[in-house]
Image 1: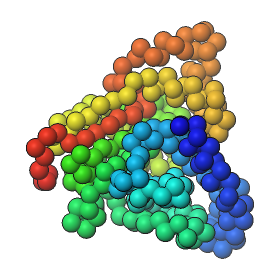
Image 2: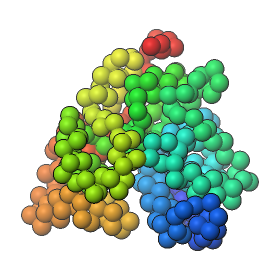
Image 3: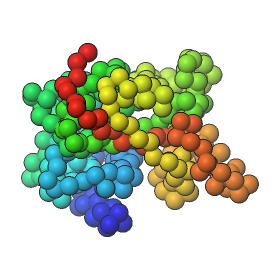
Image 4: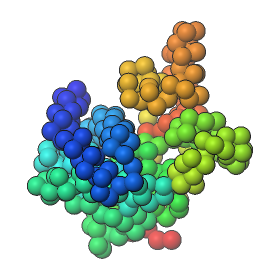
Length: 300
């Protein structure tokens, strides 16, 4: 089933004329050229393809679904085209404002799909206004939320009693920042900005959006809000495999620390050793969250 849904996604994406969309946008609303805008589309398409197999076991046509940090909304649009009851949440904040025009252009070309988009932050979700969701998911979004505790409080309150959340994000226990491909020390990230100032200053908004979330923080949040949390195994191993099999992903990491480590592990035939590393010491993380029994509306 996984291969089938990914193939369906590829067919869906192929129907868009992104060249025309980005060219029109580059001459009207955006300060970026069409080549840069097309690169963004490729990145988001690639990430959506990776997210699909993660969330597929949780999908259901009878479920109310929320994608947190929907980016260009490509995945939400695809799921809506497949008759899933999905809402996309995308505030376009924290270093991602420049995606907004491209996102809106894509949505304008897809008005017939009637996708509902919330332009609020995760922290602003309210069950009285937004209702409850049977499935909430995100990919590489949580690490950009300024107040992660407040966000999880809001997410927990809009999660249905028997609902599930599934999230993917970096684990900054591991001293590596995947967006920049640079080493980083969680408790002193300023070291990275001092050693590689050109790389950081070139994307300062992105750097300043990072909260350096960790496995142990997530454990504490789950305990605080009486949530069950379960981490998937072998995620870092699969991420390394992706460098070898996903051309778009490999291109972004070819000169990064992760790319160099991958090539060294393959050369030394040690890649399988990554499988034995526990989730607490692995990055990225994929984890599932649900309510414990006897839940009540959570308060600060």
